[in-house]
Length: 220
Ligand code: BG6
Ligand code: MG
Image (spheres, rainbow, N blue to C red):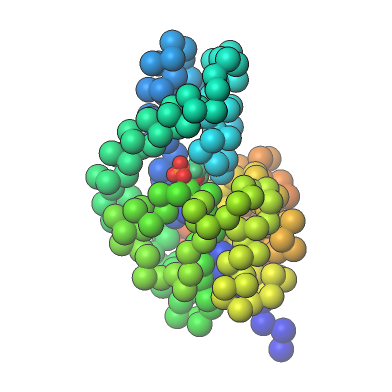
């Protein structure tokens, strides 16, 4: 029998935990220091995007185009300092609804699991919310050179799990992440808005109410 999937690759921010609000607080503070307002709508553009690419978007929103590389790195570091202050206070309560139950089921089914995230703070978050033990490997922003929509993060995950890309299923909340799954030759479950995640194999609003069997039947 053709068993699918043999591995699940999970994005972290917005899929397993709601960290977007902490990213937003920190970027908003940076924008305030730079003298402009950064709206929640602007923040949507940063989902799934690497730290430096996020800064470029923020500077574009603020109409700031005269900064050199050194100044940009200093600003990104400043933002990250504020962000880390927030995530160090995270607790296991901040794992999104239905996630623990779902991970337990997938693990119980003998399916391998990996994290595929752009964040360089992945290990801090996993540790704070206590879900690191579920994953056979963690591919994060410190381990890849190409950001999503490049498939590197998911292809590296598949390789480390010893599973062919076409036997992997990706869970993602960002359009760039779904694109990365498509580019990796993997099916995907979008978490969020179907009109934004229109290239996903299926889209759900969250894990609550979704059993592993249900997801498997929907994607096959
Ligand atoms: C992604 C988030 O998971 O990680 C982005 O969706 C964030 O918003 C990116 O910019 C990089 O995160 P970090 O923690 O390395 O700044
Ligand atoms: Mg995400």
